[in-house]
Image 1: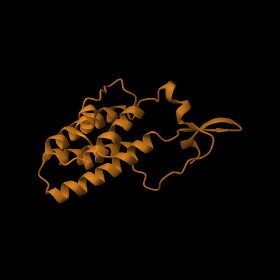
Image 2: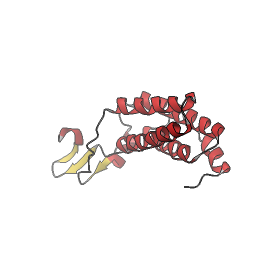
Image 3: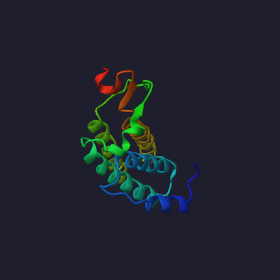
Length: 151
């Protein structure tokens, strides 16, 4: 994805709030992180880090809230999904992303360190967002069952 000034500015203007559902917040985090690693302009990097940090902070506050009813269908599957082996708790994973974002905002890293931390942040944000948007229920012959019950 090539970044353009207009794309970055429209991304920075992307609205979200405490009423934004967690799947949309997760999508926003992915967008911010993807563009962040492709951006070389320091002011844009800082602005993207700020937006990512704000979005992660809002997301962190929603982690233990019940899943809204309107998302139930989109988080229900008919076949078991692949479950990755790396499985930190969502709280910890969100915290890792928040701390890496703070490191980048701080500006005390060398250019090479910033690149590596940015790449790590992107990988963690993508994993975190994927995990948040992963199915929670499965349809079976006995009805709909929560996936965490199956383990």
